[in-house]
Length: 589
Image (cartoon, rainbow, N blue to C red; front, side):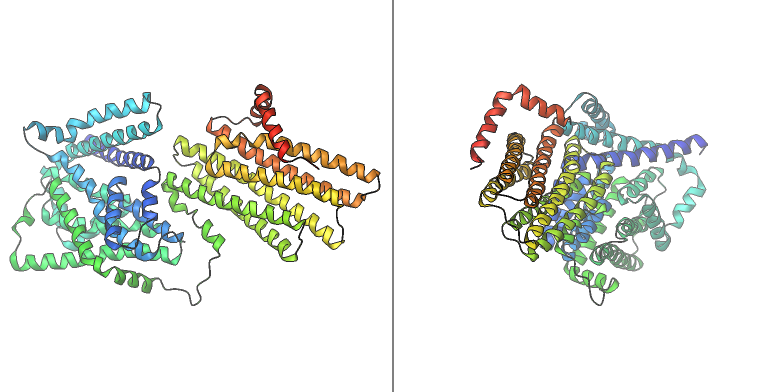
């Protein structure tokens, strides 16, 4: 081979790997996190687990990706270790689909149907349709489908380029000699494991082996040990992803490793024992792409059938390898929620976004609970209640820190337009949730001061403050529902209520000044009342921010002042009508 042939082969390999990546990413986007959600909601039925693991892996075209997701699920507490065992076994079967697709390139015959099944016949058409979808269609889903088509076309073109480039190697004695050495089971397994560990994809390494088959120098005796090694090498990705994870997540990665090692050892011992007695004549026969696919599938089906009944044994073996601490640390309920923000999920941005939204909704609930608990203290102060407000506020701060950091990492991934909008909304709104909990602390401190100094509002002031508080609770409920449900229609009702809260704030302060002049109230109580009403009014401002954000980001704009001006001026009659409705509900006595 000359230098140009080598460059062609390397270029073909690069296109092959890139096409696989593009196709996998497109498939993940089209699924929109649904496949991962199916796995998450899995029952403990082992057969169902195997089937789902195989199905998901067949779709996303990567057993490594499935296994890494499973490690993430176990690490975040979404999935139990015994559920993971079946999925991991199924993933090994699902990954063989890729080798069957690649084997289509080896179809021979003059039959029209056979010709149509060859990738060289339909790949160019897929590429054309895919490029049209990517360049001229605005629908996001169709663009993702276009990416899948282009990825597949590039994958098959790379495969054919590789195959054409290595054909001359059939006449190179040195190359034939190297492959003959791999017929040694140990050397073949090591070679397959090392290659797969380097490129971190058993599908890709099997594809490379299929490309080498065109030389005619790859016999079944060479292919079988290499394929066995490839199944072991693919475990490296999951093992690397488990570094720093919980003990159960590490055990899930170990189950993957033990499954492949035990399956390989049993298969090889049985196969070569029978070969020593019978003498398989086909071992010296040159294999082809379809033969590689058959071996790959037979081994993984055999290993699954062999080890599925011993799933609990694999689980125990992993537990013996990764032992529990003498006193395992208890994970707080709140920390369990934050564990959903697992860095492994970032490889599947759609699912990572779903997890982030779930955690953000939990943060919103805690923020609301902080505020409402603090507001209750104004009428029924207790030390336990004040302490609870402080604890909840610290928790909300923690949510903001970890969720904000995770979302910044997620923003660097290849997100769909919908997920990009969702990320922007969540990132904007978590700051408002955190600030609302800060205002809750201010309200709690005001209630604490009144309790410590034995101060009480006049009956009139207390009645007015209760009306004000009900309006604020209403706007909080509305704004948080807007965020939770992404309800743009409900968002239109937030701003009129915010205007009413502003009016209430001004009117309550005016009435206090009047009572102060009449000697019915004190300056000290006035300062406390002002602190409370100011905090409540600012809470309403943050609720307005949340509603505006949900509305504006979905429209691909974010101009708060411009939007509010248009709402209040351009639609002034409608807006004023909504304000009047709210004023009637929160009329000061």
